Image (cartoon, rainbow, N blue to C red; front, side, top):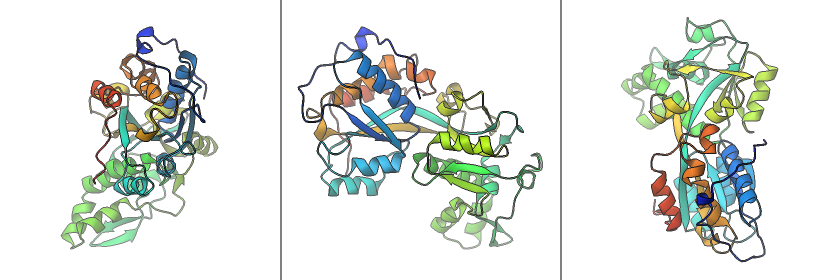
Length: 345
């Protein structure tokens, strides 16, 4: 993805200082496909405006990026992991096992998860319950779990067209998957009364949650292990397809996709920032603190990323769909002071 060259205000650069050269002279970043467009914008602007090489930014998904991040300390490991979710306890443990004990957590802003289909197709107005009914592996009916037999959307909701269910959802390596499961599928299971029905029937809470969030594997719901471009390609080849995307990706592809409402709310930076749109999540990157002062430009890049002129409400990242973090000042201070996260989970 190419972006227009940014002209960065001098005030965003003034505080940055040069670092002497080491064996590796560029910052290396990997992880979330959701954070990728934002990191790419920042990396290109950083390379254009500072006396450091342009950081190398790769995708691969949040889990894959964090796995690489936790491989150890040293110039042969990445410096930053982008993530569309917080680090998990087991990932913090894996990092510690490999000597990565000082980690700086950086929240860059917020993004919405949207549901989009071919621009020439049917219009949908979804609720979480609709998606639970469409893609859950089983439904709890008359006191027992039965396989999901729905094959068309009108079976899910009589207001929908008789369009085949063809859902393209994030694979399990994506941070988006976790948010999709918890804020859409589990929420729909609860809203529809299925979760409570399982509890009333004697199913324990953990099992009930797990059953709610187990996704069908009969071909009606397809995991996408690549980035959002793969999901878009699936919809282009199957006009009945409905995909799960980040808001920013959708907003950069409005000529190909139409977005559905969720609980009657159209996803936008405004509805996400107010909390009106129900499916949103914070975005992060994680810095290996041991690499600061060793990898030239690492701290400078991190400070530049969250500068008001870049990640603030009037910055270029907002133009590409990022919802600015109202606590951005605290994040800037945390990077400046190299405050590491509490890893005693």
